[in-house]
Image (tube, rainbow, N blue to C red):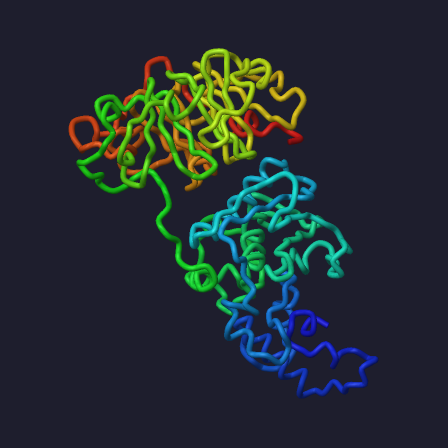
Length: 486
Protein backbone atom coordinates (compact mmCIF):
# COMPACT_ATOMS: atom_id res chain seq x y z
CA UNK A 1 0.00 0.00 0.00
CA UNK A 2 2.87 2.38 0.78
CA UNK A 3 4.59 1.70 -2.55
CA UNK A 4 1.31 2.16 -4.39
CA UNK A 5 0.36 5.35 -2.55
CA UNK A 6 3.64 7.06 -3.36
CA UNK A 7 3.89 5.99 -7.01
CA UNK A 8 6.27 3.02 -6.98
CA UNK A 9 3.70 0.38 -7.94
CA UNK A 10 0.83 0.28 -10.41
CA UNK A 11 -2.42 0.64 -8.40
CA UNK A 12 -4.01 -2.01 -10.61
CA UNK A 13 -1.51 -4.62 -9.40
CA UNK A 14 -2.61 -4.22 -5.77
CA UNK A 15 -6.34 -4.06 -6.45
CA UNK A 16 -7.84 -7.47 -5.59
CA UNK A 17 -10.70 -6.88 -8.02
CA UNK A 18 -8.43 -6.26 -11.02
CA UNK A 19 -7.35 -9.87 -11.47
CA UNK A 20 -3.72 -8.79 -11.81
CA UNK A 21 -1.03 -10.97 -10.23
CA UNK A 22 1.35 -9.35 -7.78
CA UNK A 23 4.72 -10.96 -8.48
CA UNK A 24 7.70 -11.07 -6.14
CA UNK A 25 9.77 -9.60 -8.95
CA UNK A 26 7.56 -6.51 -9.28
CA UNK A 27 7.60 -5.98 -5.51
CA UNK A 28 11.38 -6.25 -5.39
CA UNK A 29 11.71 -3.82 -8.30
CA UNK A 30 9.42 -1.30 -6.58
CA UNK A 31 11.31 -1.57 -3.30
CA UNK A 32 14.59 -0.93 -5.13
CA UNK A 33 13.11 2.16 -6.76
CA UNK A 34 12.01 3.45 -3.35
CA UNK A 35 15.44 2.71 -1.85
CA UNK A 36 17.15 4.53 -4.72
CA UNK A 37 14.88 7.53 -4.28
CA UNK A 38 15.45 7.58 -0.50
CA UNK A 39 19.23 7.29 -0.86
CA UNK A 40 19.39 3.75 0.60
CA UNK A 41 21.23 0.63 -0.51
CA UNK A 42 19.15 -1.01 -3.23
CA UNK A 43 18.64 -4.47 -1.74
CA UNK A 44 15.08 -4.97 -2.93
CA UNK A 45 14.26 -6.28 0.54
CA UNK A 46 12.17 -4.74 3.29
CA UNK A 47 15.15 -4.56 5.60
CA UNK A 48 15.21 -2.60 8.86
CA UNK A 49 16.61 0.58 7.32
CA UNK A 50 13.99 0.58 4.54
CA UNK A 51 11.13 0.01 6.96
CA UNK A 52 12.44 2.80 9.18
CA UNK A 53 12.45 5.18 6.22
CA UNK A 54 8.93 4.13 5.27
CA UNK A 55 7.81 4.99 8.79
CA UNK A 56 9.44 8.43 8.70
CA UNK A 57 6.92 11.34 8.74
CA UNK A 58 6.65 12.72 5.23
CA UNK A 59 4.70 14.64 2.62
CA UNK A 60 1.60 12.94 1.22
CA UNK A 61 2.36 13.79 -2.42
CA UNK A 62 3.58 10.92 -4.63
CA UNK A 63 7.31 10.59 -5.23
CA UNK A 64 6.74 9.28 -8.75
CA UNK A 65 3.87 10.95 -10.55
CA UNK A 66 2.50 8.70 -13.25
CA UNK A 67 3.39 5.04 -12.78
CA UNK A 68 5.56 3.61 -15.55
CA UNK A 69 6.61 7.03 -16.93
CA UNK A 70 9.88 8.92 -16.99
CA UNK A 71 8.30 11.89 -15.22
CA UNK A 72 11.04 11.95 -12.58
CA UNK A 73 13.62 12.89 -15.20
CA UNK A 74 11.60 15.99 -16.06
CA UNK A 75 10.25 16.88 -12.65
CA UNK A 76 11.13 20.55 -13.02
CA UNK A 77 8.39 21.03 -15.63
CA UNK A 78 6.00 18.40 -14.34
CA UNK A 79 3.11 17.97 -16.79
CA UNK A 80 3.70 21.57 -17.86
CA UNK A 81 1.98 22.45 -14.60
CA UNK A 82 2.87 25.96 -13.52
CA UNK A 83 1.08 29.23 -12.86
CA UNK A 84 0.83 31.50 -15.89
CA UNK A 85 0.88 34.64 -13.76
CA UNK A 86 3.63 36.04 -11.55
CA UNK A 87 1.56 37.67 -8.81
CA UNK A 88 -0.23 35.00 -6.77
CA UNK A 89 -2.68 35.33 -3.90
CA UNK A 90 -3.25 33.01 -0.97
CA UNK A 91 -5.50 32.70 2.05
CA UNK A 92 -5.53 30.62 5.21
CA UNK A 93 -9.03 29.20 5.21
CA UNK A 94 -8.66 27.22 8.44
CA UNK A 95 -6.06 27.72 11.16
CA UNK A 96 -4.43 25.02 13.32
CA UNK A 97 -5.23 24.45 16.94
CA UNK A 98 -2.48 25.31 19.39
CA UNK A 99 -0.82 28.21 17.56
CA UNK A 100 -1.61 31.91 17.52
CA UNK A 101 -3.15 33.14 14.30
CA UNK A 102 -0.53 35.88 13.95
CA UNK A 103 2.28 33.34 14.32
CA UNK A 104 0.79 31.14 11.61
CA UNK A 105 0.36 34.13 9.28
CA UNK A 106 4.02 35.02 9.74
CA UNK A 107 5.34 31.47 9.17
CA UNK A 108 3.18 30.91 6.09
CA UNK A 109 4.35 34.23 4.63
CA UNK A 110 7.98 33.24 5.33
CA UNK A 111 7.43 29.89 3.61
CA UNK A 112 6.13 31.60 0.46
CA UNK A 113 9.06 34.01 0.62
CA UNK A 114 11.45 31.06 0.20
CA UNK A 115 10.21 30.78 -3.38
CA UNK A 116 9.76 34.49 -4.14
CA UNK A 117 13.41 35.03 -3.15
CA UNK A 118 14.46 32.66 -5.95
CA UNK A 119 12.02 33.77 -8.67
CA UNK A 120 9.94 36.70 -9.89
CA UNK A 121 6.86 35.34 -8.13
CA UNK A 122 5.04 37.42 -5.53
CA UNK A 123 2.59 36.15 -2.91
CA UNK A 124 -0.09 38.33 -1.40
CA UNK A 125 -2.30 37.25 1.53
CA UNK A 126 -6.00 38.04 1.17
CA UNK A 127 -8.91 37.38 3.49
CA UNK A 128 -11.75 36.77 1.06
CA UNK A 129 -12.76 36.07 -2.49
CA UNK A 130 -11.10 33.80 -5.03
CA UNK A 131 -7.42 33.04 -4.46
CA UNK A 132 -4.76 31.02 -6.24
CA UNK A 133 -3.66 28.95 -3.22
CA UNK A 134 -5.82 28.15 -0.20
CA UNK A 135 -4.11 26.87 2.95
CA UNK A 136 -6.12 24.75 5.39
CA UNK A 137 -5.41 22.72 8.53
CA UNK A 138 -7.68 19.65 8.55
CA UNK A 139 -8.16 16.29 10.28
CA UNK A 140 -8.87 12.86 8.81
CA UNK A 141 -11.17 12.88 5.79
CA UNK A 142 -11.53 16.52 4.75
CA UNK A 143 -13.29 16.46 1.40
CA UNK A 144 -10.52 15.77 -1.11
CA UNK A 145 -10.50 11.95 -0.96
CA UNK A 146 -7.04 11.88 0.61
CA UNK A 147 -7.61 11.64 4.37
CA UNK A 148 -4.91 12.36 6.91
CA UNK A 149 -3.72 9.48 9.11
CA UNK A 150 -3.24 11.14 12.50
CA UNK A 151 0.02 12.12 14.20
CA UNK A 152 3.13 11.05 12.27
CA UNK A 153 2.85 9.44 8.85
CA UNK A 154 1.58 11.98 6.32
CA UNK A 155 2.12 15.53 7.56
CA UNK A 156 0.59 17.49 4.69
CA UNK A 157 -0.15 17.42 0.99
CA UNK A 158 -0.55 19.99 -1.77
CA UNK A 159 -1.86 20.07 -5.31
CA UNK A 160 0.03 21.10 -8.42
CA UNK A 161 -1.16 24.28 -10.19
CA UNK A 162 -3.10 22.27 -12.75
CA UNK A 163 -5.20 20.88 -9.86
CA UNK A 164 -5.64 24.20 -8.05
CA UNK A 165 -2.50 24.58 -5.93
CA UNK A 166 -4.20 24.26 -2.52
CA UNK A 167 -2.17 23.02 0.48
CA UNK A 168 -3.61 20.98 3.36
CA UNK A 169 -1.90 20.28 6.70
CA UNK A 170 -2.79 17.57 9.22
CA UNK A 171 -4.13 19.38 12.27
CA UNK A 172 -3.45 16.38 14.50
CA UNK A 173 0.28 17.08 14.19
CA UNK A 174 2.00 19.13 16.88
CA UNK A 175 2.92 22.14 14.74
CA UNK A 176 5.68 24.25 16.28
CA UNK A 177 7.74 27.35 15.47
CA UNK A 178 11.50 27.66 16.07
CA UNK A 179 11.53 24.52 18.21
CA UNK A 180 13.11 21.07 18.01
CA UNK A 181 9.91 19.67 19.48
CA UNK A 182 6.95 18.78 17.31
CA UNK A 183 6.85 19.42 13.56
CA UNK A 184 8.23 22.69 12.19
CA UNK A 185 5.48 24.58 10.38
CA UNK A 186 7.76 26.79 8.28
CA UNK A 187 9.79 23.93 6.77
CA UNK A 188 6.79 21.75 5.95
CA UNK A 189 4.87 24.72 4.51
CA UNK A 190 7.81 25.76 2.31
CA UNK A 191 7.97 22.18 0.98
CA UNK A 192 4.24 22.00 0.28
CA UNK A 193 4.24 25.36 -1.50
CA UNK A 194 6.88 23.93 -3.82
CA UNK A 195 4.19 21.46 -4.95
CA UNK A 196 1.65 24.30 -5.17
CA UNK A 197 4.02 25.96 -7.65
CA UNK A 198 4.56 22.85 -9.78
CA UNK A 199 7.51 20.95 -8.28
CA UNK A 200 7.42 17.23 -7.54
CA UNK A 201 9.63 15.41 -5.05
CA UNK A 202 13.40 15.40 -5.34
CA UNK A 203 15.69 12.41 -4.73
CA UNK A 204 18.41 14.84 -3.59
CA UNK A 205 18.37 14.22 0.14
CA UNK A 206 19.50 17.77 1.07
CA UNK A 207 16.76 19.39 -1.03
CA UNK A 208 13.72 21.03 0.51
CA UNK A 209 11.63 19.04 -1.97
CA UNK A 210 12.86 15.67 -0.65
CA UNK A 211 9.71 13.97 0.68
CA UNK A 212 10.88 13.00 4.17
CA UNK A 213 10.72 15.28 7.20
CA UNK A 214 14.25 15.80 8.56
CA UNK A 215 13.40 17.68 11.75
CA UNK A 216 13.81 21.33 12.67
CA UNK A 217 16.74 23.14 11.04
CA UNK A 218 17.59 26.34 12.90
CA UNK A 219 19.52 27.68 9.89
CA UNK A 220 17.51 27.20 6.71
CA UNK A 221 18.82 27.72 3.18
CA UNK A 222 17.21 26.67 -0.08
CA UNK A 223 19.20 23.88 -1.74
CA UNK A 224 20.69 24.43 -5.19
CA UNK A 225 18.55 21.56 -6.50
CA UNK A 226 15.39 23.38 -5.37
CA UNK A 227 16.59 26.67 -6.81
CA UNK A 228 17.35 25.08 -10.18
CA UNK A 229 13.96 23.39 -10.17
CA UNK A 230 11.85 26.43 -9.41
CA UNK A 231 13.81 28.65 -11.80
CA UNK A 232 13.27 26.14 -14.61
CA UNK A 233 9.56 26.85 -14.21
CA UNK A 234 9.54 30.59 -13.50
CA UNK A 235 12.97 31.91 -14.41
CA UNK A 236 15.61 33.52 -12.24
CA UNK A 237 14.75 36.34 -9.91
CA UNK A 238 15.20 39.71 -11.59
CA UNK A 239 16.23 42.84 -9.76
CA UNK A 240 13.36 44.37 -7.79
CA UNK A 241 13.14 47.66 -5.98
CA UNK A 242 15.18 47.54 -2.78
CA UNK A 243 17.13 50.05 -0.74
CA UNK A 244 20.37 50.54 -2.69
CA UNK A 245 23.38 48.71 -1.31
CA UNK A 246 25.83 49.83 -3.98
CA UNK A 247 27.49 53.20 -4.34
CA UNK A 248 24.85 55.53 -5.81
CA UNK A 249 25.53 57.74 -8.76
CA UNK A 250 26.54 61.34 -8.23
CA UNK A 251 23.78 62.48 -10.59
CA UNK A 252 21.05 62.01 -8.02
CA UNK A 253 18.07 64.31 -8.33
CA UNK A 254 17.49 64.13 -4.59
CA UNK A 255 17.94 67.88 -4.29
CA UNK A 256 16.80 69.01 -0.85
CA UNK A 257 16.76 65.38 0.30
CA UNK A 258 20.54 65.30 -0.04
CA UNK A 259 20.92 68.52 1.94
CA UNK A 260 18.59 67.24 4.67
CA UNK A 261 17.54 63.57 4.61
CA UNK A 262 14.68 63.96 7.09
CA UNK A 263 11.25 63.13 5.62
CA UNK A 264 7.55 63.55 6.44
CA UNK A 265 6.25 60.27 5.00
CA UNK A 266 7.27 57.34 2.79
CA UNK A 267 4.89 54.79 1.23
CA UNK A 268 4.81 52.00 -1.36
CA UNK A 269 1.63 52.08 -3.44
CA UNK A 270 -0.35 49.13 -4.78
CA UNK A 271 1.60 49.37 -8.07
CA UNK A 272 4.85 48.78 -6.08
CA UNK A 273 6.11 52.33 -6.66
CA UNK A 274 7.61 54.01 -3.58
CA UNK A 275 7.21 57.73 -2.89
CA UNK A 276 8.79 60.06 -0.35
CA UNK A 277 6.95 63.19 0.88
CA UNK A 278 8.53 66.25 2.45
CA UNK A 279 6.99 69.70 2.84
CA UNK A 280 5.09 70.54 -0.33
CA UNK A 281 7.10 68.17 -2.57
CA UNK A 282 7.38 64.46 -3.26
CA UNK A 283 9.89 62.12 -4.93
CA UNK A 284 9.60 58.71 -6.62
CA UNK A 285 12.38 56.26 -5.71
CA UNK A 286 14.23 53.90 -8.06
CA UNK A 287 16.80 51.16 -7.48
CA UNK A 288 19.63 53.71 -7.36
CA UNK A 289 18.06 56.79 -5.87
CA UNK A 290 15.45 59.26 -7.10
CA UNK A 291 13.67 59.09 -10.47
CA UNK A 292 14.41 61.74 -13.06
CA UNK A 293 12.10 64.75 -13.00
CA UNK A 294 11.64 64.92 -9.24
CA UNK A 295 10.80 66.55 -6.89
CA UNK A 296 7.29 67.40 -7.97
CA UNK A 297 4.51 69.35 -6.32
CA UNK A 298 2.13 67.40 -4.06
CA UNK A 299 -0.76 69.75 -4.77
CA UNK A 300 -0.31 69.43 -8.53
CA UNK A 301 -0.20 65.62 -8.73
CA UNK A 302 -2.17 64.53 -5.65
CA UNK A 303 -5.33 66.58 -5.91
CA UNK A 304 -6.75 67.44 -2.49
CA UNK A 305 -3.82 66.10 -0.45
CA UNK A 306 -2.21 68.39 2.10
CA UNK A 307 1.48 69.25 2.42
CA UNK A 308 3.63 68.56 5.49
CA UNK A 309 2.15 65.11 6.05
CA UNK A 310 2.54 63.07 9.22
CA UNK A 311 2.45 59.50 7.88
CA UNK A 312 1.14 57.13 5.19
CA UNK A 313 0.55 53.43 4.51
CA UNK A 314 -1.05 51.21 1.85
CA UNK A 315 -3.63 48.68 3.05
CA UNK A 316 -4.48 45.24 1.63
CA UNK A 317 -7.44 46.73 -0.28
CA UNK A 318 -4.93 48.60 -2.47
CA UNK A 319 -5.90 51.97 -0.96
CA UNK A 320 -3.26 54.37 0.38
CA UNK A 321 -4.00 56.37 3.53
CA UNK A 322 -2.31 59.68 4.39
CA UNK A 323 -2.41 61.37 7.81
CA UNK A 324 -1.96 64.92 9.03
CA UNK A 325 -3.09 66.44 12.30
CA UNK A 326 -6.57 65.13 13.08
CA UNK A 327 -7.45 64.10 9.51
CA UNK A 328 -6.72 61.36 7.02
CA UNK A 329 -7.07 61.03 3.24
CA UNK A 330 -7.70 57.86 1.19
CA UNK A 331 -6.31 57.56 -2.33
CA UNK A 332 -6.76 55.05 -5.14
CA UNK A 333 -3.46 55.36 -7.01
CA UNK A 334 -2.95 59.16 -7.32
CA UNK A 335 -6.68 60.01 -7.12
CA UNK A 336 -8.37 60.96 -3.85
CA UNK A 337 -11.54 59.02 -3.05
CA UNK A 338 -14.79 60.91 -2.57
CA UNK A 339 -15.70 62.56 0.75
CA UNK A 340 -12.16 62.91 2.08
CA UNK A 341 -10.46 64.06 4.24
CA UNK A 342 -12.12 62.55 7.31
CA UNK A 343 -11.40 62.77 11.02
CA UNK A 344 -8.98 60.16 12.37
CA UNK A 345 -11.30 59.39 15.27
CA UNK A 346 -14.03 58.44 12.79
CA UNK A 347 -12.12 55.99 10.61
CA UNK A 348 -9.40 54.95 13.08
CA UNK A 349 -11.11 54.95 16.47
CA UNK A 350 -8.61 54.72 19.31
CA UNK A 351 -5.75 56.33 17.37
CA UNK A 352 -4.59 59.81 18.48
CA UNK A 353 -4.19 62.86 16.26
CA UNK A 354 -0.78 64.12 15.13
CA UNK A 355 0.78 60.68 14.74
CA UNK A 356 4.44 60.24 13.78
CA UNK A 357 4.31 56.94 11.89
CA UNK A 358 1.85 54.50 10.32
CA UNK A 359 2.69 51.18 8.66
CA UNK A 360 1.40 47.64 8.10
CA UNK A 361 3.72 45.18 9.83
CA UNK A 362 4.58 41.92 8.02
CA UNK A 363 4.75 40.07 11.34
CA UNK A 364 0.97 39.91 11.67
CA UNK A 365 -0.60 42.08 8.96
CA UNK A 366 -1.89 44.63 11.49
CA UNK A 367 -1.61 48.44 11.24
CA UNK A 368 0.73 50.14 13.70
CA UNK A 369 0.74 53.81 14.66
CA UNK A 370 3.67 55.44 16.49
CA UNK A 371 3.54 58.74 18.36
CA UNK A 372 6.25 60.01 20.65
CA UNK A 373 7.32 57.17 22.92
CA UNK A 374 4.23 55.02 22.36
CA UNK A 375 2.60 52.84 19.72
CA UNK A 376 -0.90 51.50 19.00
CA UNK A 377 -1.94 48.39 17.08
CA UNK A 378 -5.04 48.75 14.91
CA UNK A 379 -6.95 45.68 13.70
CA UNK A 380 -9.92 46.53 11.41
CA UNK A 381 -11.41 43.05 11.97
CA UNK A 382 -11.45 43.43 15.75
CA UNK A 383 -13.98 45.26 17.92
CA UNK A 384 -12.82 47.56 19.26
CA UNK A 385 -10.00 47.84 16.70
CA UNK A 386 -7.57 49.03 19.39
CA UNK A 387 -7.40 46.99 22.59
CA UNK A 388 -7.50 48.65 25.98
CA UNK A 389 -3.94 47.49 26.66
CA UNK A 390 -2.64 50.15 24.25
CA UNK A 391 -0.69 52.37 23.93
CA UNK A 392 2.55 50.53 24.71
CA UNK A 393 6.16 51.80 24.76
CA UNK A 394 8.18 51.84 21.54
CA UNK A 395 11.03 50.35 23.58
CA UNK A 396 9.30 46.99 22.95
CA UNK A 397 10.67 47.22 19.39
CA UNK A 398 14.25 46.31 20.19
CA UNK A 399 16.78 48.81 18.89
CA UNK A 400 14.37 51.54 17.74
CA UNK A 401 14.43 55.10 19.10
CA UNK A 402 11.38 57.13 20.10
CA UNK A 403 9.85 59.87 17.94
CA UNK A 404 10.14 58.08 14.59
CA UNK A 405 9.53 60.18 11.44
CA UNK A 406 7.94 57.38 9.41
CA UNK A 407 8.21 53.67 8.53
CA UNK A 408 7.86 51.44 5.48
CA UNK A 409 7.24 47.71 5.06
CA UNK A 410 9.40 46.75 2.11
CA UNK A 411 9.15 43.84 -0.36
CA UNK A 412 12.38 42.26 0.93
CA UNK A 413 10.82 41.22 4.25
CA UNK A 414 12.17 44.07 6.40
CA UNK A 415 10.49 47.11 7.90
CA UNK A 416 12.44 50.36 7.63
CA UNK A 417 12.15 53.15 10.20
CA UNK A 418 13.25 56.71 9.46
CA UNK A 419 14.32 59.44 11.86
CA UNK A 420 16.24 62.70 11.41
CA UNK A 421 17.86 61.70 8.12
CA UNK A 422 18.84 58.24 9.39
CA UNK A 423 17.15 54.87 8.96
CA UNK A 424 16.96 51.55 10.82
CA UNK A 425 16.37 48.20 9.14
CA UNK A 426 14.13 46.08 11.36
CA UNK A 427 14.25 42.29 11.04
CA UNK A 428 10.58 41.30 11.33
CA UNK A 429 11.35 37.62 11.98
CA UNK A 430 13.99 38.21 14.68
CA UNK A 431 12.04 41.23 15.99
CA UNK A 432 14.96 43.59 16.43
CA UNK A 433 17.00 46.11 14.47
CA UNK A 434 19.06 44.10 12.00
CA UNK A 435 22.75 43.48 12.52
CA UNK A 436 24.88 44.31 9.51
CA UNK A 437 27.99 46.21 8.53
CA UNK A 438 27.96 49.16 8.62
CA UNK A 439 25.75 49.37 11.67
CA UNK A 440 22.33 50.98 11.87
CA UNK A 441 21.20 53.70 11.80
CA UNK A 442 22.58 54.67 8.40
CA UNK A 443 22.26 57.91 6.42
CA UNK A 444 19.10 57.94 4.32
CA UNK A 445 20.54 60.27 1.68
CA UNK A 446 23.35 57.98 0.64
CA UNK A 447 21.61 54.61 0.93
CA UNK A 448 18.10 55.53 -0.31
CA UNK A 449 18.22 58.76 -2.31
CA UNK A 450 21.45 58.24 -4.24
CA UNK A 451 23.16 61.29 -2.75
CA UNK A 452 26.94 61.67 -3.19
CA UNK A 453 29.05 59.99 -0.52
CA UNK A 454 30.38 62.87 1.52
CA UNK A 455 30.55 63.81 5.17
CA UNK A 456 27.99 62.05 7.35
CA UNK A 457 26.19 60.66 4.29
CA UNK A 458 28.44 57.60 4.44
CA UNK A 459 29.25 57.17 8.14
CA UNK A 460 26.37 55.75 10.17
CA UNK A 461 25.31 57.50 13.32
CA UNK A 462 25.98 55.08 16.14
CA UNK A 463 24.64 57.27 18.95
CA UNK A 464 21.24 56.74 20.47
CA UNK A 465 18.89 59.62 20.99
CA UNK A 466 18.64 61.07 24.46
CA UNK A 467 15.83 59.78 26.57
CA UNK A 468 15.42 56.44 24.78
CA UNK A 469 14.22 53.70 27.07
CA UNK A 470 16.22 50.41 27.07
CA UNK A 471 14.31 47.69 25.23
CA UNK A 472 12.44 45.07 27.21
CA UNK A 473 13.19 41.37 27.01
CA UNK A 474 12.20 39.34 23.94
CA UNK A 475 9.58 37.47 25.98
CA UNK A 476 7.92 40.73 26.96
CA UNK A 477 8.07 41.93 23.37
CA UNK A 478 6.37 38.88 21.91
CA UNK A 479 3.70 38.98 24.62
CA UNK A 480 3.04 42.62 23.81
CA UNK A 481 2.89 42.12 20.04
CA UNK A 482 1.03 38.82 19.89
CA UNK A 483 -1.69 38.87 22.52
CA UNK A 484 -2.97 35.48 23.59
CA UNK A 485 -5.83 34.13 21.54
CA UNK A 486 -5.04 36.01 18.33
